Length: 138
Image (cartoon, rainbow, N blue to C red; front, side, top):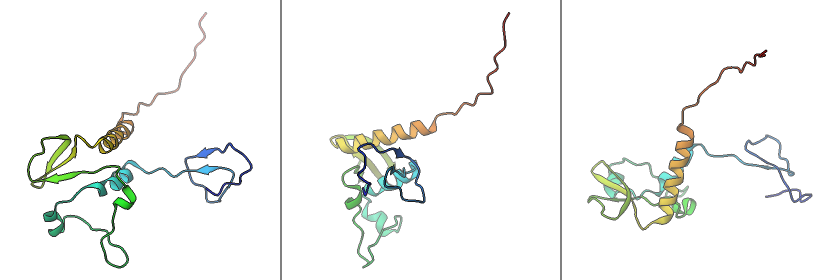
């Protein structure tokens, strides 16, 4: 992490500064949309959709297809099938295919639950309150 090594306690900040400070840790968090984009690469896209050009294929500089599993690992795997799945945890029918998470895929289910929690935290109604007035009582 290239820290200065002068302490065993380092403050963590959620915003990146322009100047590198080796006495603190700075973290840049992804937005919910960024997380969704990242995880969308865990979808096993039907060959038919690829052939129809419905999906953007990321390429390496040499023109070969980029392997997103090198980045996403096994965080989430979304399967696709023409037939409705029987052993699924979550499923949706889209463009003549079923997209689903296998009920036996614990890692994908946990990732999907975490994604739902993040969305819930961000989608709540924000209530504003006016100024608080204190009046003397006799």
